[in-house]
Length: 297
Image 1 (cartoon, one colour):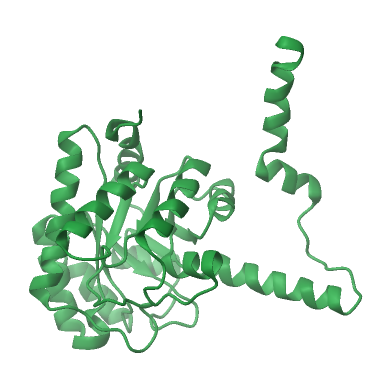
Image 2 (cartoon, rainbow, N blue to C red; image 1 turned 90 degrees about the vertical axis):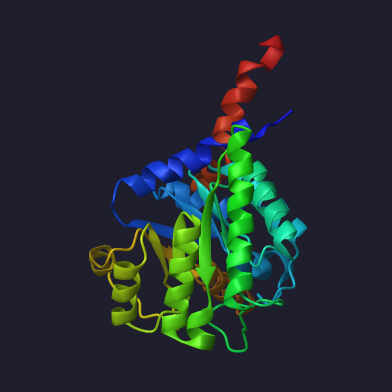
């Protein structure tokens, strides 16, 4: 039977990455294959994006429609497909403080290295779209404390998971309130800190200068936050640069172009070589293992 101890090494690997003091470039995934692509390309960390999973799994918007069970199921397949640590989007925790604790524990058991918990009001939505609301600061802090309690309970059992505390208050209450929430989350014991949809470089710098501990920045092409160079992000003090929709957007563009080519009677171009595709999904390793057991092995 799987125990929390079996799932603790992912968190340890993430802690080691953060301890290096360098910016971690983190493309975000939406399924097992996209996670494996990220790992194969040499990136040391990925994040299961709620927006991307809702789009890829359900063809629905990131507006609170996807459930805890669906995200957990997707997360298990992602974590099982790669060796690099994976951060899981835990949204609002899917309910009250007790739901938050269940979410953190469930994600840790699925193999996630960290869980992101945010302060939006349900139904939550993509942080770079209009119409989102946040709960009061006290309720937001209660969510993070519940997540930390779940983390501590896991540690008592020999497991581990990191808590990534997110606030969306920048869009609804202004930068000062968002900063105050991030400071409160840090004081409560969150491991990684994230203010969604920062507007400019001065806000990024103030966030990094004010809040202790590793900080994440979300770089959504076409979103609210300016996409700075990785050197500037590292100089500002960020630990993680997340690219939430880069893979999903590029994959959808490539698939759309291929479909247009087929409909026009043309062969699609820019396809992955079939041999490379077979290698990526594991045919070579499967055939090697199968040969070991041929004729009784």
